Length: 405
Ligand code: NIG
Ligand code: FE
Image 1 (tube, rainbow, N blue to C red):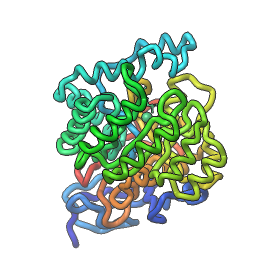
Image 2 (image 1 turned 180 degrees about the vertical axis):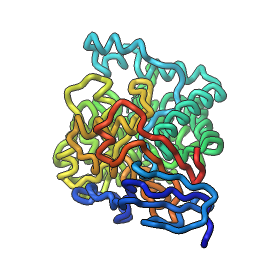
Image 3 (image 1 turned 60 degrees about the horizontal axis):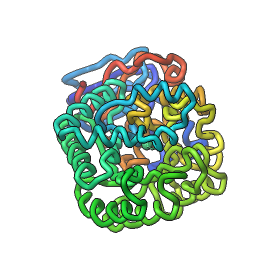
């Protein structure tokens, strides 16, 4: 009998997510390619077999009877590297002060920028590592991480270097996004700061970042300014991403299609024209329901309309000091209970489509032969339990690159 390192056997439901090797849309999002009583065999960190009644001699065997086994979650939008916290802003939010007003008063992103500039690389590393540990324990095995709490050359690069250290030292797979254009520093004019981003920061991202993001929003960066920054990023090999149409529809979705962004994120207010343009270009819509949830907004991204337009949808936490959660399980719950996504759509959005949104779908996001053995075992019998049994951590075992954590 052939030997393997790890065998996970007899899962009540094994979600393989096997299917087209590109972002899934519409009906495709509902297909999880489920194997009843399924097993997964792992060797040298990779999946070597997936099916029923697998027969191998395994060093470690995990009996997953009665349980749900699926790919580890992929969180494609986080601001995980930051210092300090902003719990005191909740009182302002409860008093009805809008997010942009808190920012204008020097709070919000500006507060975190102050804290992050003060923090040493070691402090940033320790604080971020703790968050990655929590993410792993909640089943996230790959994630994206943005800069954006530096807003000066020194701190933006400091954050990128911390991210690089995390890539090397932490079991989490982490891809970096340069978000120097997170907002305009208090003491600068937009044109002056954009010049710094383009001429001083972008050249220094070499070998440190894969994507370039912009907070394209009324009162932050306009569509024209965002286009300029993203086009400049492309010159340095950075693939565009956009924080688009979160509070006001400024045409962020259309810009994402125009510049060939890999994803446009938030999309609460996007126009139908913008969404259709995204669908046509295959731009992934990353929905972040944690943000309207913690801002106590009535409105969430119109997921049904976005899916019907043909946009491949992914989910992410947006983990940041305004929306501090490490849980993709909570995102699935909000996606279903607040955005009317089905459990199956939400699972696709939190795994395979999320992997597509950070260019990792060839290695993670589904359980298929040859892919990285990143999978999670949940203490529930099927995927419909994910939005149903909420507010607890259903993940019992996390396997990262074949290693049981
Ligand atoms: O995606 N909207 C801009 N950036 C983050 C929030 C950052 C913050 O408030 O610190 C977001 O929601
Ligand atoms: Fe964000």
